[in-house]
Image (cartoon, rainbow over all chains, first blue to last red; front, side):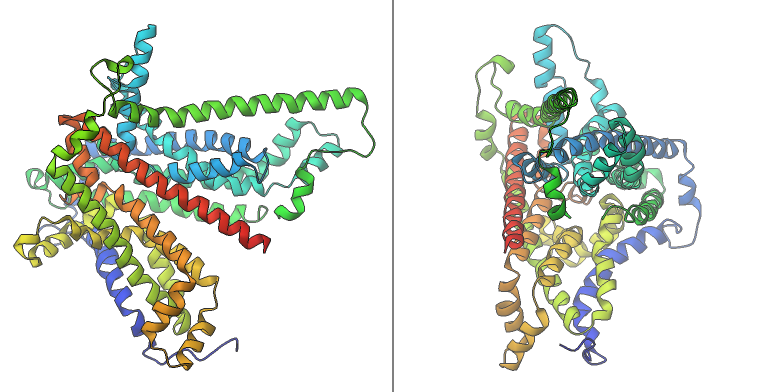
Length: 285
Length: 293
């Protein structure tokens, strides 16, 4: 096969037209609608009124809450996920433990939404299994916090930890046993190996995973919406309020401004992720 | 890398036995590590298992509370809610439609680009992976005006039909379908296969359906299963665009009859878990078979 074959005529790109048209209409157009709508009013005249919504007390609070929630669940997910990944990686690389854990994590990392909210209400809600079982033994579990930020952090951890395992396992695999042996031969203690070899090597991969988890939590909507049916303590729920009561607010495009704000936060996280990723690719491959 | 690392991972069998004291220390350290690992595994297992068990328990809870007898009333009553049954059917139809449309859109395009316009491949990859970085909740805001038009253009009788969600769902599954199909196409020689078929007089449709598709069968199945799993669990887009799919119906019902809602949740979850789990097992078997060959 010749390395550089003459490829099609000048009109060959037309073959990809259906795809490009579809993506243009249902992916690019909505994105443009959000970006442009954030700066126009209902009559399509340019305005900064919508963007001013981002300065609103409740909206600012919701973004602060969203960032705090995403950061907290990312840190918890990353630390616990890294521990679980370590447990898996210290076992047999072809063993049943590793196979089951990766398969289960692959499923649970995608798990979210109404069913996840139900699962937690059924365990630690008012009539939950754990709540009632504990009540029979004595201690009363308070349940109100499940429907607030701390509850969201716990529920989000349920999909963040498995995601971390999936993302971090390849990095842990990249740590060669020879490096530990080299450290031992030179008289290093396990702690010194951990502190001076493993941690510096894995830090970029860990930070990258942390950013990925942050973006993952920041973008999540369904779980929070099912858990918190009233009010809007985080940014995605502000969008729900804006979409369902636009007319009342008199700010038809406020939702677009909030959506644009969310895009910006995710874009920052993903850019940092790309930078860190390039750094971590240097050693672990 | 696993090939050269494997011998080093095996339990160390030193040629000359180390001094007894050192060997004892090392044995104790290994034993301590095993204990730590087991304890951690039990803790993680509990964290992940309890909510799932609680879901099953809640959907089968009878009048006697958690200690009382189990009851399947919640499950039996699913049929008593025609709206709920309708939503389940709609979600299943959406799952099939989304899989078919996304494959029909992606496979011909990706084959065509590989053969004729490779300079477009970066653009197509970028577009397909874009939904990973734009949250669904943001896309919904942009879809809202577009769906006003879709509604305006559909005949009145079909306006409430959730099947219109297919347009949005195809976008949501793009990244997953793209990656799976791309991996499938990379594993075969698309050019030789299609040129051989074309020189024997096959039409492009025959090349796609009877030459390429059978050769990337597992990848197509993977992509379809991922789409089905994603669509069955989708809530964000449906609820905010005011369509009723199974997740929305479940959520609405949870205030009114939580037993039934939790029964449907358990069933949908079991279906999705089973699909994804089978997929990961199948994928692993193929990989191991491929590497040993």
